Image (tube, rainbow, N blue to C red; front, side, top):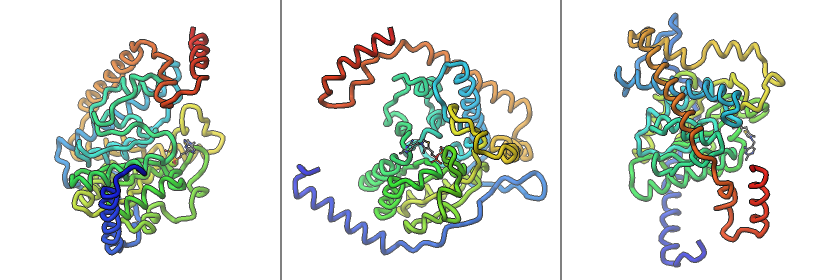
Length: 379
Ligand SMILES: Cc1ncc(C[n+]2csc(CCOP(=O)(O)OP(=O)(O)O)c2C)c(N)n1
Ligand SMILES: [Mg+2]
């Protein structure tokens, strides 16, 4: 940056400061919504609603995506127990947040996932073997982000929020109509990088959707120990952007909220913060035992309202799904996973030198002996 010719530097900075003035002048936001938006009823006194933008084909496609993610997740826990993949971050009951939001995007919109959305690439046509390889620690699990408009899976909490804000800013500077979405958890809202990214996106009025999966736990830290704000959506007010709260187990409510946020982003309306509220009914990851800190009765209660079953009920009430169709889709997803783990396991062992390459331009001399020792251990 210091070698940037002064003419280019000043052109960039004058654009930056004038945009800041514009967006500051526009920053008049309503208090964040505190009610959870819902579309799916309960089959009783709470009626189902219809959603614009999804016809019969779209509604079933969404179901297919939910089943694909659910099957990926359930099979992954089994593969972990069989020693075929490493530690795995379970996303059971998070599928609606992922599928509902991705269905509101176009393929040229960029996705920035955290580890909780590790399999979101499947919704962009990524083979299950790629994600399974990632969890196997194998380089076959690395991809070129530009191939899918999908950034790599972010494990440090919140550090991808500024990356997503920067990419979205670039889109704005290029005059593109596409946007970016970044996924993070409730715990991430306490991180500096979340704040930096959200504030930058707001000030620069970039086309970004900040999608918070509020599953009410950050490993063993409950949401009540995370913030004194009444809702996480309230944080949006501080950035001067709209904040929306949805039921994260209602895939159609998630779709609707994201669709609106995408439309606003494309029209130059800037970022939106979406708080999707759900409950983490599984342990944080396969290495965690949540019995040490969670109320298991609450977990059982929450499971009754899990997102796939709720959407299945909606489709059945609308006459769009029957047992035969549901079984066919589940069988398709299981077969994909069978092929996926077979392909991942057929990958030849990775070259251990890859662990050391690309880390430094000038590697320290110790790397050579470290690599030799690793090779000796691996036999
Ligand atoms: C910068 C950073 N600090 C700490 C951790 C350790 N860590 C891993 S997961 C996690 C909890 C994150 O909770 P949340 O943001 O709510 O996401 P969730 O796992 O619930 O999806 C923490 C603190 C980390 N990965 N990165
Ligand atoms: Mg969380």
